[in-house]
Image (cartoon, each protein chain N blue to C red):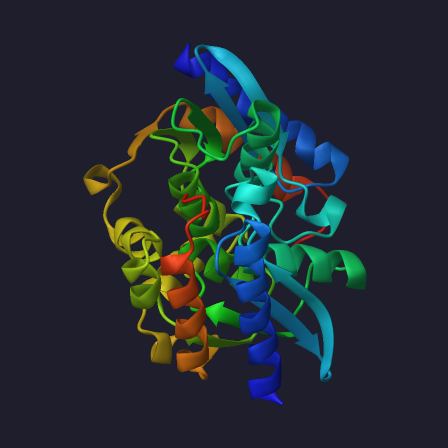
Length: 154
Length: 154
């Protein structure tokens, strides 16, 4: 079954090219049933976050009415980039199947590997400038959160 | 001005708690004008990807009608998690201001720091199981992408 679901993700990555998206697809499955099957729509939707896995997580969460997808598995045509891998952690999806790698993606012009390298660097060494200000004001909000009794944790 | 915009992000992180969201806010600014100001809506929208920065990038991209936000700056109440930091790279935003850190977020129960540690590990050492299959089928799609003349690169 794993090959079949992964092939669904790969097939939609090919369709994506024809529709004007990037060459990536993802499929989320629960109990051998496809919950969502999406492709990259960054250039179609003018949304830099609209990678296949993010789209598939958003669709699956909406469909299942919950933000915890720990009962699901994700199939990605390519190894998830750090944005999508982190989203998989936040969604608590425990298993990822993938076909091509970040290095294969780099060879056709995508930044996945570069971003993996960047986020591993100390803040001061990154290409992006990161500046810390106003910490105490934000810490006050965290104190409110700690004491707030009606919070929904995730 | 930097303090003012960062404070807007912090103020909306406090409003977020009252609305049932997580205690995080983000503000995207271009030429000293606020383009988007959003808070975390993970639990409100049942969407594990709906962090403040992702929401702010999606709103700004939609408003400006483009996926390249290299003329913008982002202000985050807390250091972006790896999902949001990677999204900032994909959006090509060159400067990030932030207040509290991943360690502060960890102290109030959020997994930002854990996910930073996880994505730095080799695939085989992660808590999430990652399995590679069907590489050649996905590489065939990459060959189509390489030769496709109408592609929009991002």
